[in-house]
Image (cartoon, rainbow, N blue to C red; front, top):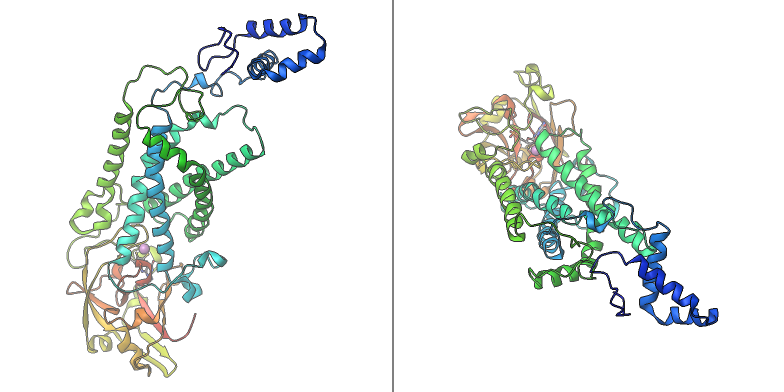
Length: 476
Ligand SMILES: Nc1nc2c(c(=O)[nH]1)N[C@H]1C(S)=C(S)[C@@H](COP(=O)(O)O)O[C@H]1N2
Ligand SMILES: [Mo]
């Protein structure tokens, strides 16, 4: 504080005594020395300047208005750089994993392969990292997307706790001190707004099954890039301070000091819980969310534990008794679309073949044990699929060893999931089937009867149901 050592020094964090300031000011003018000298003495005594300045400001009424802009308003003894840093470091790790698994999920759609695979065709250079999605390990997307969605849910208490821990800074006074301070606050707006937006759109999508018709991907994708930009700036500027704070452990700096970063309450209330207790509470909240969420990604018996997963639709029991994304009725599949008149049309450079359901069953049937893994984070355990290899179907239209990519189309008339393009490497995998049966039974109408695609490692959305046409080697 002041270097004057006058003995009038107010306690830490208290406003300076106005009487003292006034006294000093009158002393300076009453000393009889010319104005020049008085200016000089003001300049040379930094303590005087700040006390004078504060006095003038408070007399002029320019101090923080009563309420949350005053540091004394915030009473929690828990707030401080240590707690904020701990939450921040957990989020640094968690959000990095969320970002990477999110980028990976986009790559899994093979968006550069075809327009029908891409929900954000105007992404430009944001797709710089895209790669051809592999088919092994066959549970790849089940893992990456399960982690993405489960972690996103589990981090909610940590995010809320982190925001709570820094809330006094939202009311900082004056709201803007300088150009760089304004920039800093703008980046925080993008950071907090971006985090809120990503978490809310993600959770709504998981819980409510595409309430955004198709545009969820666009919102979540561009939102992620805006958010991550602000996140990188924030981490760059705050990480050193956060690391210092955790190294200092529980001994918090005094309120008002540089290291307190405006987080420590100058007049803390009596603690009702320790900092470690608060951490444990947030941790328990996350663990509770993990317990009621993770089961949907594991699938099978564990699904019953996923209380937070969208329920409502009971897939029933038996060979077809596993999770359904969209029922035949919900996407307008009519019985006549998939009745005796149904045909599979296979097209390629060598011509076209139309096959009945019986003819398909008469071809060599192959088995593959593969899960369905949806972008929403839920997965099934491995199901026993059987049907015709995609390479065998390509061979019918004159395509040999170098089978190209294929456009898959459903009898479904509308909706963004009615068609998809599978890459050549997906087509060539011997586990990639046009499945006719699952777990020893005919496909149920809701699982895609008469025929559906199943590909190892791919997102559920590429396992097109109610397939009626395969076009090999023609980019869509
Ligand atoms: N024609 C068509 N195929 C589709 C869909 C769709 O809406 N229409 N949904 C896809 C999605 S998003 C998933 S996760 C899987 C789910 O398959 P299931 O319902 O058999 O579990 O089917 C995929 N195939
Ligand atoms: Mo899905």
